[in-house]
Image 1 (tube, rainbow, N blue to C red):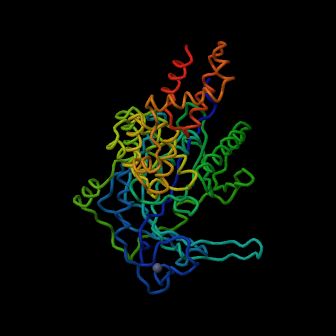
Image 2 (spheres, rainbow, N blue to C red):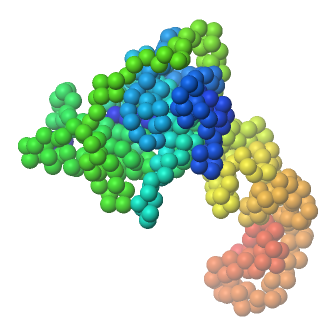
Image 3 (tube, protein in one colour):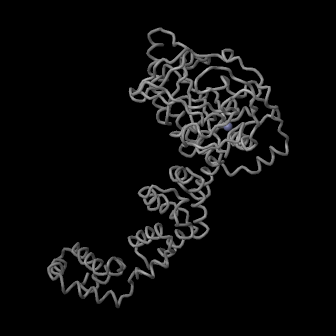
Length: 479
Ligand SMILES: [Zn+2]
């Protein structure tokens, strides 16, 4: 049975760009500094000040556009979007209206190793960020911090192509990866450098006309986006089932209560009285610039994910976590240069090494352990001279100190004892010390050998080769 209603979702994502300075002035673009310290007459909108466009903003925005398969316009221009709000001292925001920087792109939504949907990107345009209001509940006062005024943004608008709250979450996961791979943004939602509003409507399954949409704001994590949309699906279904009409409005996600609440009626473009920005020239981009930018794009995460499955035989799950960051994927491929067995590298990387990163709360690029270290450790393991338990210890030591595994093994005398002569002495010793277990074994309890091997391992601090020593016990005591 097909469901009664089809869910239709489109997203509007605001992304702060990782530039040194702001979009129209030379104030630093930095998060977390004392309020109102990174400001000047331009970003405060003082009368008589004039904006100057920061070229590195253009490079990052074009990179994002190309990574999202958009057509970058050879001509785009800035417009003023007029509205009054205390965090916007000029009472207008410089944005792009009818000639955006880029349009008609797409993002391939991949899941479990295949594409589940091609989500169209309608447009990507440049704009400046507004300041930030800080509401002090205790004192019933609102403060304003203008440091964020003029921070460069791109707004990415998707077509209404997403069909469930889960798909919206997945879209954001991929978008974030693309923006991180290309160095466009740090995408820290907790610092506001990636923000997402969602439009959602329902329509009877099998119909094409779009239902009346509701915009949801104030979702501070990808999980919140999904939860807010899930709530809205249920709310709108109830209204429609009862024969009602969904009001076109903007609603606010209340994380604590787990509900959306009415915020205001939906505003239309004409409410903003857009008009061309007279103080900034249009952006004219030539082919040379665009083809240079195309050439500089790194391999993008979707491509890398599919290639890692195909070329290295990784499972979709492994490929997904290893390509979750560019540095991690680079680390994986660099390790293969030293030790060309992808499955083993993947297991050690996502197992032991991830464990160490997690406990130390570190990223792969801020540890002294390099692909050379991991490759060398796996080589020593293959030589059969190091037990896997000890290999884990060596990895940890290498992780902390940056010493090469071979050095650690030699220094600590950790090499596995496989010599029969040496091991035989230990076997004799254990047999003399545990006559009860020996008798047990002779009486037919073959499992008792496990206990004896355990004692031998203990005596050698884990350095005895367990296979060799088991064989020696069996030979000595008679099978
Ligand atoms: Zn400034």
